[in-house]
Image (tube, rainbow, N blue to C red):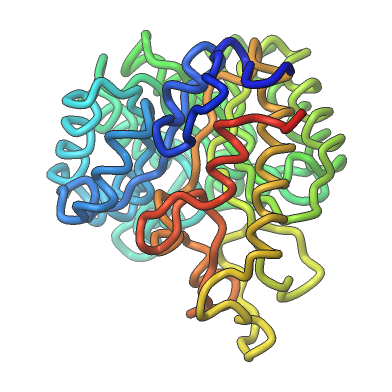
Length: 366
């Protein structure tokens, strides 16, 4: 990197980071997205909407396309939020992502049960899966450009997660999910999405899964690395190797849920499982009055080194999506310890750009 040269964008020596936008800086490298919530979709959060429109050229829905929200009861769909979400993306010329079709979490218990509350048969659950995917993907055919078809199917040890999908249908539930999605929209990109793929055992399991899907003829476009990182882990080397390993499989790589947790670890677990809950306490919530400058600078340095890796792989990395818009939106405020004041994103609670934003758009100092 030389001076203000940051992947093809030549910045004037006097360029102010406040005049730059993420989507402009990285337009020749990859899409830059944000997960948006219901208030932003319905444009009730004016501050958040302004940032989204200014900074991002891709969007993901934080929750409204998950089974429990869009299909809460048998035969009943709530399409209004999803319709508004897709329209928001189209109106602002953004790449619209669908998240997520098949997941073990936020899927109602009825999905796996018959009228007597007993587990469905394999055939009945496959029919229910097909109906859901055909209905949801079919409704947005040609409009939602890419789908996280299956989310978090691999355990930390690399084995398939023992979900009701696996227990009732068998391992081929994965193949069927992609076949159904491709049938509903043959032009849509189809992804596998998971966390902690930087950990070697889990990565090996996900690589094995991708190979099996490819061998079955599945139209798998890419793999999403969720990117729920901490200030010091995973290492830059681990992130780099993970992207390289999936690139060898001939798939695109997306960083799909990027944030950097600056708060003390509540346990030794590196899992991003949404069901994790840990005890609270003052030590767990040290930055209630704002982030000290020392930590701001560490966060900026961390984002800078991560984006250097993403840019190194700009031919493979197709999209980098932050999981939230401002710190106030972040799921980390309530996970794994409820009620914490978290500071993991590029914009603070007032919507102001943090030093991490400058570190990303300006590139490494020379």
